[in-house]
Image 1: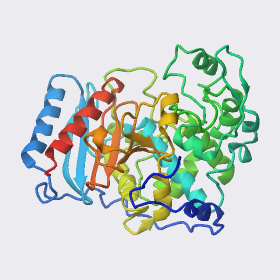
Image 2: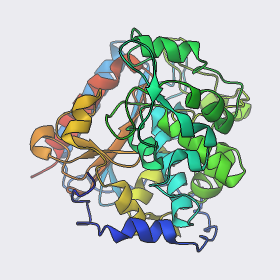
Image 3: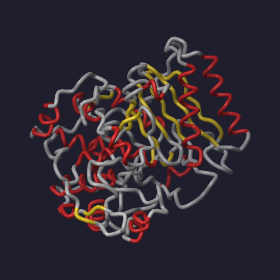
Length: 422
């Protein structure tokens, strides 16, 4: 299952064991200067892009703003560490006059997941977390999980749920909103899935561990709250809230000062808002008990690019190392098989696999755009990022409209690779 090529070549099986066994604690790294922008401008043509075709992207997004399709958007495209295209389009929300910019703060929803996965991998490096250990080693309530049956009568799982299952959406955990009409989804809602009054650790043990899994652990890919449960594991190991652990291990060292679960009220003038208000668009400033590892962060394009650059540069950004190169490589190994993808609801699509917290391109003859080894993920409100090591291309795109996520995913891939000179 785990023997596909990573972007740095075939990883020896011993690498995972070496990382898991390492007991040496990682020292807290220095902090990247937050006042020095992550956006380093480059000349588009020198970076291999056709300026005229980049202008066509600009024209298209401006047209979407002018037509009222979106109040605003932000797109950043780069290569070889430099930015060839960056622009805010329109304004931060309906009725606003503040232009969209790289400092606009967006709810990034599931773009939170890779940040949580990286936080967990710092614990793997320290020997505090084992990818192949049962979740129950850290959260004992998961020792007796049950699997949903067609007749609605769950039966005990025959295999343990492992930490790597949480990170690869193969744990059996679900999101009820993906297929809300299913009996198992209704059982999850009735069982307290949407509670917000517990910490990530307590929510994982008191709610999720008692709910029926959609499949045996490791058997099927279903998009899930596995990274939320991983947040609970992180809280248990560190003794910190997930917010504190992420800030200490990832966002703080990277200088991501505008990324967090709760935003200060004095940053409200920088918030992006959707023109289609509903319960999805939470209050950025609201105090909370549950820090949702699957989707609770907000961030800016400038901040998140720091995170993208760190992963693209083998775990280091501007001299601050978050992960070892071999740890990043482990994250980029496909955790799925054709059988696993076929048994679940696998919507990354043809030519895609899934690593530890990120989607992966494993056959670019099927994706037809991003190259093999591309890793990425998105957020339900239309936010997305990727890094393509084959072509050394990166992008960050931010809007606040869940109805347009799929449309702009397709458009951005077409636009960007059409502009990339062969």
